[in-house]
Length: 147
Image (cartoon, rainbow, N blue to C red; front, side):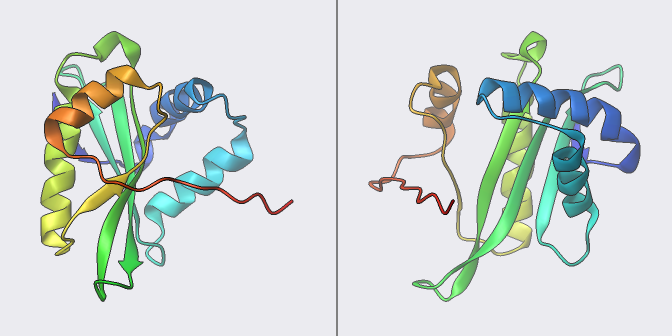
């Protein structure tokens, strides 16, 4: 397996994986959303990034989206991991660990002191991995709907 930034020819495989990710979180997905997110990945004006992990046969089997965000209390930028998904057939293969290893390198290059993320409380399989590579912090996440 190998990890690297997504390239334009990955769009079809990425789209299939992103549908799987949205389905896991019971979120609707359509081509407008896919096109918007894909554009963000390659926009030089948005600090939004994507890594992909490919099988030894060159198939995209997982992805990770992350971005830079300001941390006012620190007076610096930090990283935020938005999305992570690996094809269920490749879970347990080490793909997630490879993605996190590369994410850490990106964070170090950008001088982010940390990368933060959230996950569903019942996402037990992912949380078992996260517990091995990171620590939890004592914050509660809120969401205010604006519609």
